[in-house]
Image 1 (cartoon, rainbow, N blue to C red):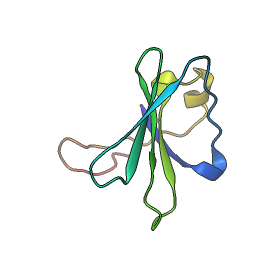
Image 2: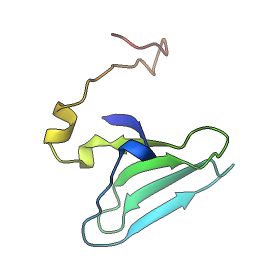
Image 3: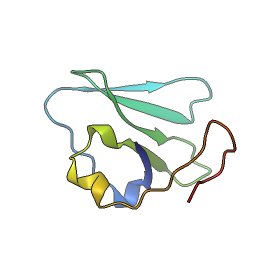
Image 4: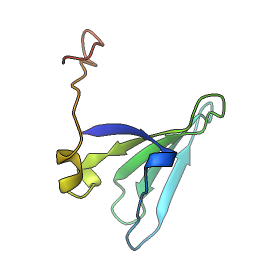
Length: 84
C-alpha cells in the first residue's frame, strides 16, 4: 500500500545502513531504497514547479501507522477512478 504526503508533514527515519537514491529520465522523481535489503521505501518529486510530494511504501512502515490513516481505493487497472 502506498500513501501520498508532503515534505512538511512527514519525517522519515532511516535505520542503520545506507539508502540509495535513483533518479532517471526527466529527473522529476527520486526513488529511495534501503541500502541493506533493496526495498523501495518511498519516492519524492523533484519538480520545483509543483509542491514537493512523497509517496510512501507503507509495507516498510511501522505496522501501527497505516491503521491510523484513511484509505482510498484506486482502480489503476481499468477505470482510473477512486472506488470510495
